[in-house]
Image (cartoon, rainbow, N blue to C red; front, top):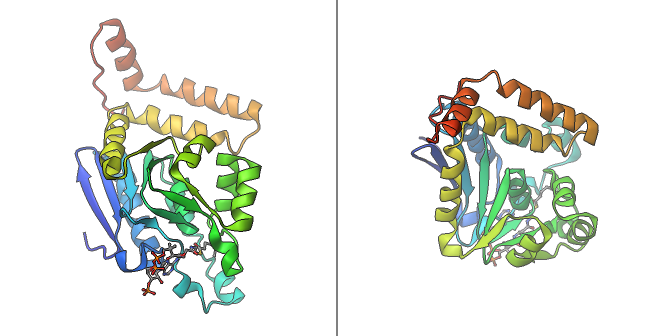
Amino acid sequence: SNYETILVEQRDAVTLVTLNRPQALNALNSQVLAELIDAFAAYDREESQRCLVLTGSEKAFAAGADIKEMQSQGFADMYGSNFFAGWEQVTATRKPWIAAVNGFALGGGCEVAMMADFIIAGDKAKFGQPEIKLAVTPGMGGSQRLAHAVGKAKAMEMCLTGRMMGAEEAERAGLVVRVVPAEALVDEALKTAAEIAAMPPLAAIAAKEMVNAAFELPLGQGVRFERRLFHGLFGTDDQKEGMSAFVEKRPGNWTGK
Ligand code: HXC
């Protein structure tokens, strides 16, 4: 690929995307965003790819949006370009993806990690929304996703003080699914991704869609939405295969149809 700020490799059915701007601790400038949008769209399109892992370096997942790029922007620039709206293309990814976070996940870095379906953290990971120290606030969904993930108390404190939350606290608070030794992080995330990649793909997309609906719909509507997707899966070949395989005591062989 001809990306300059990210590395993309395919390992069997798993795409590994590594943020690669070490000189700026993976600060997320417009080029990183454009390249991520392209890589995520390619992943979503590519039939052989069934799960994606997004990671950074051991020192930093990403230290935020690029402060040097934003420094001189005015309201008309930000509003006129709908700055950060491009991230909605990343969150529109239909297939599953995991954030594997080592080191700093600050500001936009924390916000991008929270866009993932879930986060696995290295033991030295540090999460924070320090934008208030720059006289701004989260702008890529951080106030909303952090509040959903850890509740009002910790979300408020983090957004108001800019303090960092370590990996252990992040696990207790429900921000990350689990903490693993930093050096084992990417392998662990790839292993979990391979497990997801082995699942029937339409059921995986449906599961992702319905869990996400829990954050947007009232309970009754969410339950009905889930039930309709569930009904819909009975129109797939993989449902016939999955249930036959169970009855015949053999592993399922998925076609994604
Ligand atoms: C641009 C950044 C950057 C960022 C680090 N760098 N973070 N450049 N934008 N967000 C650059 C530094 O300028 C420096 O480049 C190089 O990366 C190494 O960083 P250091 O500060 O020298 O490293 P260290 O002393 O180890 O400190 C690490 C750190 C610190 C604690 C993570 O870099 C830091 O506080 N960064 C900013 C964190 C932050 O405020 N993030 C939120 C951004 S605002 P040079 O060339 O100088 O050596 C944001 C907004 C979201 O995300 C939406 C609202 C607008």
